Length: 150
Image 1 (cartoon, rainbow, N blue to C red):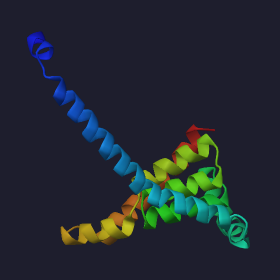
Image 2: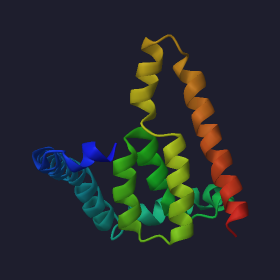
Image 3: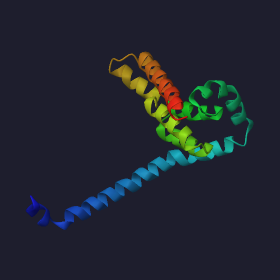
């Protein structure tokens, strides 16, 4: 077994590093295309009354998760768009690690609901049921994490 490692050609290693580096750069740029604009949009929104209204409207509901009302924007973007847009919102809001943990778990359970609902429909799964199940599970996880992380 060790003979294989000793006699392995270094070109495989260099090729692997080159390919991995290139894929890493491409992935980083693709994610930045989503996260950076969302971050700036949220930063701008924080200076408008919209964030105040979001906070006021959603605070009573978000308190069950131990989150401020404006964190509802993370859930809305994550649920409707994707995880990466939710990351951009999280960064833009300046939340603490406890709040980020709760939101991250909630969005990881229920993200991209529209797109994944369409996929479920095509494979014969009821998209309405799956969406309700995922959002409910997300809320339950957020509630339980709020209790555990106090």
